[in-house]
Amino acid sequence: MLRLYDPSRHPPSWTDIIRDGEFAAFAKNLDTEAPSDHDGHPVAAVTDATCVLFDSLEDARRFCEERTQHNPSIRFDIFDSTGRVNPPLLTIVNPLRADRLDDNPRAMRRRARLGYALILGSLPLFAFQYWGDTEGVFILPMFLGINLLIAGGRLLLMNVGSKDAERRRQERLSQVRSRSGKPDVR
Image 1 (cartoon, one colour):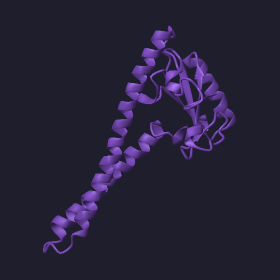
Image 2 (cartoon, one colour):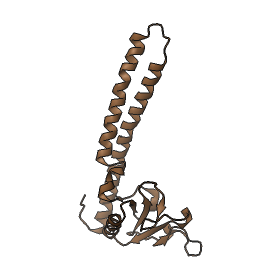
Image 3 (cartoon, helix red, strand yellow):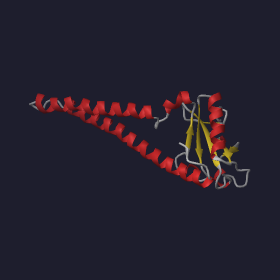
Image 4 (cartoon, helix red, strand yellow):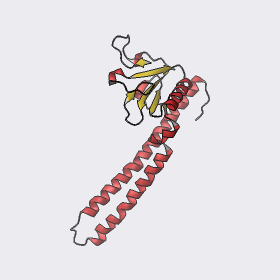
C-alpha cells in the first residue's frame, strides 16, 4: 500500500514512483465515492489516500476481485502508469453491485427508456400549447414540455458519452495487453 502523497518520502508523489508497465488500484466506497483503503475502511483525510501498485494488470484484477468478494461496498479503479490522466482501465466491483456503475448495460437501457419517455411526454404538452391554448394565456405547458425535452435529451446524451468512454477504454486496454504480450480477452 502506497500513500498518494507523502512529504517524508522521496519522491513525495505516487506518480513519480510508478514505472511504465505497472498498475495502480485505487479503492473507494461504492455508495459514497469516498476514498478508502484496500480493505474498504474510509481514510481520515484525502491526504491519507492510498493505492496499491502491481506489476501486471492481471495481478491487479485478481487482487481487486478478491477484495470486492469480501467487501461488496468497495470499488476499485485500476490505472496504468500514466495515472489518473485517463479514465481507469478497469473498474472492479462485486458482481452483485455492478448495476451501480454508470456504464452498466442495464443502467444504460434504463436511462434510454426514461429519456425516450420524457421526450414523448413532452409532445402532448406542446400539442396542448399549440392547439388548446388559443389565447396564449398558459405558459406552463410549454415550459414543462421544454424541460422534459431537455431532460430526456440529456439522459440520451449520457448514454452516448458512456459508450464513447467505454470504446476508448477498450482501445487503451487492448494497447496495454498487447504491450504485455497477453491476448485481448474482454
